[in-house]
Length: 231
Length: 109
Image (tube, rainbow over all chains, first blue to last red; front, side, top):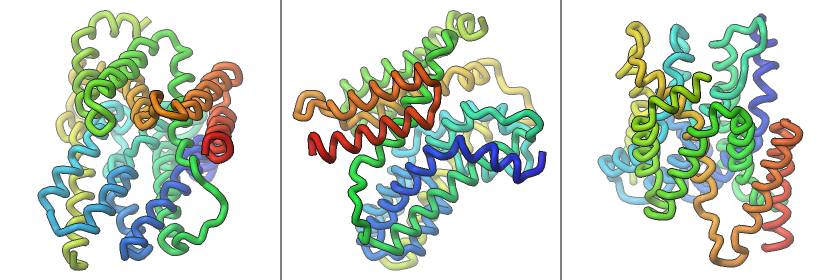
């Protein structure tokens, strides 16, 4: 399948992410600009860091005193969940050759979710399809950041709540996956385990305990879960 | 913070982020067979992780204070119902987001 056709087939999957990233990216660009860093800095950060929540934290870091060790540590804490994504892509990314470093670099929450659920069409080369999704998402993010940084706060229509589009993306995909009985238990483990940790540890600190709890539960109940998933 | 310091900070953040994302690929390189336990985790984690991401996105919702997370609850309910019924992601996401925005801008704002 020609590359352009693969790109066209990948595009619809990325529309929700386009909406989210354009607006969130713009918000990031605006925020960064307000701290004295121009849209060029926004572009650089969005190209090389490419991690939404971390980039927002980075704005604070860049507005404070230089502290490289702290920056490294906080990055590790904020982005720890990205480790999960690689485990699920080990097989998908096998044999992709030169594309691999970029595919790894572009593993954001949203791209990961799309890569898990989007099916390459008949005749398409899977690794090209994945690359298209990843590149499109990255371009949306960079574009939003640059637009935000360049235009500043010159937006007049009320966009409050637009970032809910990311929540909506995850909820809709969660629902869709829940249809398949085989996936329900891991899905509920993820949901339930995270809620418990949220209640115990609070919104700021619950991700790391959640990840630990999830892996622990999935490991302890591996036998029955594998049985269910293999039905 | 000087320009150089800012550049170094960004470089550090980029590098750590890339290392975190790439760690599984270093631990389990493609030329060797992946251990069955890791394969199993790789299959089970997406469903659990997306559940975790849903909670992560909704972590700031506060049911105990006004508006008692009503915008979130209503929007999520609409998304789930639409997705279950029509199975069209764009429809569910679009409607859910618009409803949420209207609720927080016009009703509860």
